Every structure is written in structure tokens, then in C-alpha cells.
Length: 195
Image 1 (tube, rainbow, N blue to C red):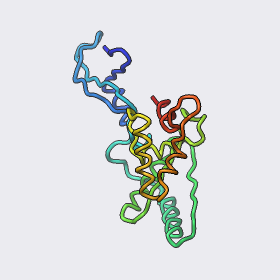
Image 2 (cartoon, one colour; image 1 turned 135 degrees about the vertical axis):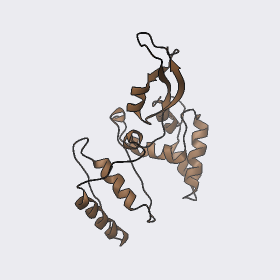
Image 3 (cartoon, rainbow, N blue to C red; image 1 turned 90 degrees about the horizontal axis):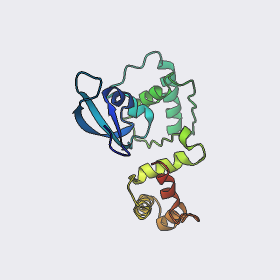
Image 4 (tube, rainbow, N blue to C red; image 1 turned 90 degrees about the vertical axis):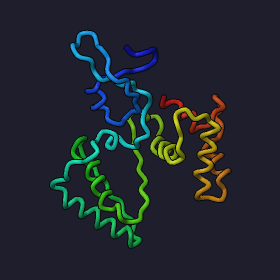
């Protein structure tokens, strides 16, 4: 059913993938071996959602149970940070124990307070790039689109940097210097590898 270089998925797969990708709803289709037509979607591209947790969770999260002590610890550290005493909190544990859910609950508690949130995500698909989390955050903040050409990316990066620095063109040049082999900018080269 899928055209060349395309992927079509059924409802069960679409539900499991959540918002990890952008999709085109193709309605229903007759599938060989099934009695009734099934709903199908075409997978278009990776989504711009910044974390798997956000992409896979439903619109409403279940209540956080039994984590009052951890939330209170995080809030105490937050108060100390606001007083000018730098704080670092490491939340570690096996996959599925609720690390992301705990940080989401903490973020909800801070929603009424003025703060800047920076989040960086590692990926097993980018182990060769130690700077991947920072590059991805810059790309997201600058509003890069998958179809952007290198020149458009450089312009978006310069615009982002101009908000905080007087020497934005020089700073942007450092981030987007031409690569020796391809002649493309470094960030564009890294982005192209995601597709």
C-alpha cells in the first residue's frame, strides 16, 4: 500500500508512536486478510517534540504517587538556587521508574514562577557526537526545519544569537563555519544526517 520511500502505519502502531513523528491521515483502507477497513497514516518526518516522554505521554498524566519526598527535595533545592546558591540534582534510575514523570511534576510546580528551562537529551543514535544535545537544543531554539537549506539555517541561527549578543554575526560564523569536505555549514551537515 505504501508508495515508494514511504511508510504507512495502522492505528495500533500510530497509538504506540504517539507524537514521535508527523503523520498524514489517509483515512481508511482495505487490507488484504482483514474483514473491515482499517485507519491508516503515512509517516512524514520526525516531529519537533523535544523529548520522547512528551511525545509518548497522553494529554493528561496520571497522578504522581509516593514521590512527595523527592518533590520536596527538588523544591528546597530550587529555593536555594533562587537565593543565589547554585544547585545540581541528579535524578537517576532504571528506565521506566518515573524520572521523566518526576521532572514533569516538578516543572508543573514551577509553572507560576519566572524561570528559564534548558533541557538537553542524549540519544543512542548520536553517540558519535558528544555535542549532539547542545546542537539539537540550538536547532530547536533557532526553529530549524528539516527542509531548510544551509543558508536559511545560518540566517535563523544568526537571528537567534542576535537576541543575546552584540557580536551575533561573528558568533554565528563560529557555529556555521564551512565543513572542509562538503562545503555545507556544520549544523546543516549534522541536520542532514538526521533524515
